[in-house]
Image (cartoon, rainbow, N blue to C red; front, top):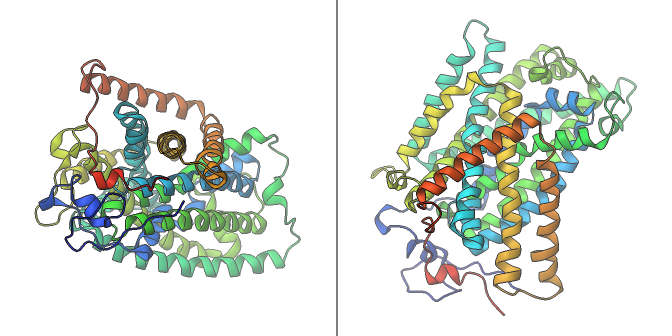
Length: 478
């Protein structure tokens, strides 16, 4: 089956299955006078996803997962990358079918109906609402470590205010900030790799230790539990899918950006975790939440530790910026469709951004200092893994069942690969801590109650996106 990418919109009527990307979204999906601004091409989309991942996010849960796995952090990242790669291909397939905002909510709605779509979006909201909060928390933790006189909460509040203003101004501003953030992290990574390699060369090192561990924790269960927490490191590819209505050519560029961000980010995480544990083979830390600082001091002294804090905080700021942008786009989509109050589906007349949704996320993020880092990380992963599992199933339903795509290649892409992805994600999901599972299930229960209210006791279908004929014909049929 050939991929269809469409072209630039020049005002023509277009035809089902071969119209422009702009025509697909502008007619029948969005209000013509209040459309999101199309400004992102492949490089900007890839940068958006990479900044959302935060290349240095490997150090966010470094101490926590290293202790949990007995020093097998690199192995845990390999497991997570394999699971995420299958899911990334599923996202790429679904965004070619429905190149609009909404992510897993939209895909599940079109594949399984509005009720399933709502619950998928509700689960995804859990991690999207908490991810900005997670970034504000680590910003406060690391800046407080550098400047003990200023409380964690003050640093978090300053970050929230700055991110809110930048998100209101618009997506083009965010893209420009992303370039500077990625550049700073790239410089740090090059320096860290060089110093870590020098440290490893100057001491006896077991090069397989970052994969085999020190024997303090045995069994594959600990590795999968650690891998489940690390799922939050890969949310960048889902974030890219939420920018479909702000991409110039969503069917072509977003699938490419999704795969590039997932594979490239995963390989980088594995390399950095291996270098860190090889240079500093400790598997326990005095303060697990900031165990990465011990690595920096070992590898490059106080200079590297300070440099790391600066670039890490910048990366966390960039992730907060992009994660808040993504969750507000999801809220905007669900408000626009009537799943949430309609007022959330409106855009600011000047900036053309969802200002009310941005404000709500900022208020929720004020609770950053009230929740522990470990709990936040697990809760973010819960929502992500739930949504990822449904997206894998959506590929099977959309292409194999509804579109009747057949043949060896289609069977591999639209049946075998997504089923394997679903099984791997389910395994990771059930490996989360009991606290994360019970809290996440409680969140889903609240979602079921709201769905019952919304649908008058499940007697009616919840509102969902109305696609034009072009959007429905986006997938060529044989």
